[in-house]
Image 1 (tube, rainbow, N blue to C red):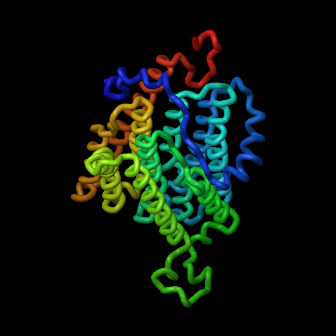
Image 2: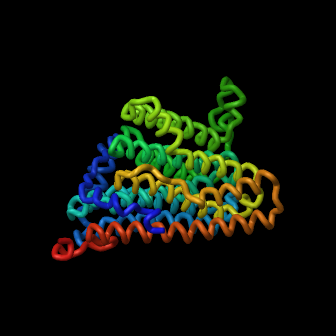
Image 3: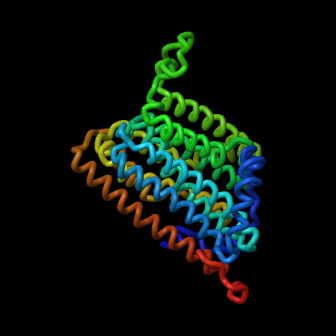
Length: 386
């Protein structure tokens, strides 16, 4: 079973690993890096492993999720305390900061490794959904089409950027990108709710702007709805850039079709199943967090699998029986299966996904750390690394 997760014959490619990614974010280059990241990294002891910093950042996301789950268990609540949004904004900023300095710590301690990249990307994949929960709480829509947009907004660019990295040989983020400007945008929304109250984003554009010349189809949108639609527009622009970059690398027409269609079929199935459940299932609306945990870990597995195959220089393989177990939930919702059966199926699916994802993480981290003779959450003495 371990061979199905990580092909041992390809482990040799880990020895030739080189970090090739880049981040051209204007905000990061001229503000965050010189004034925040560079100053914080000076205070971090060189004895702390980079993966510990990565994991610490993820813990802030977990804190945010727990707080939101307590005060907005169905994500339809309109009386969420303002401090919840302030805390969420701070947690997101702490995650973002630690996510940007773990690489600095790796370079200053000479601990750059494929395990570190996989660890970092794996946490980022999980944060795509979990990091969106605070904004879903602010929107108070529950599991609706708008919530679907909120969750898809980070998922789509992440999976396509990872896919681009696989084909191009590196992750190259643009002058305005999701991990920097995107997260700051979400944090801004949280601060608006913290200062102006949750009701602020539930105003219509007409009430907020007082401009009657705008068509009613736009003017009657609530602020959070307009922001979600605007975000999806940016996602589509980013998506076209990813596709153009990969197609420029993959020159033959047949290879392009294979790369774009065949390799990402599991993601398309995941997206269709996920959308179907959100649209048709009342059970999910009543058990939001059970559902979110399941899709978070399943998506995390898919994203990490592409990164793993990139590092091992092996064909993309993100098909898994779990994906098809997940689709049974979509079928049950679409055909209106009795609610009790849908609930048990959702709980069973989420439980299996949790167990498999834990096993998946255990296998890849231990296999790679053993093969490269490096620590996972600690820096080994030089004599142990030789």
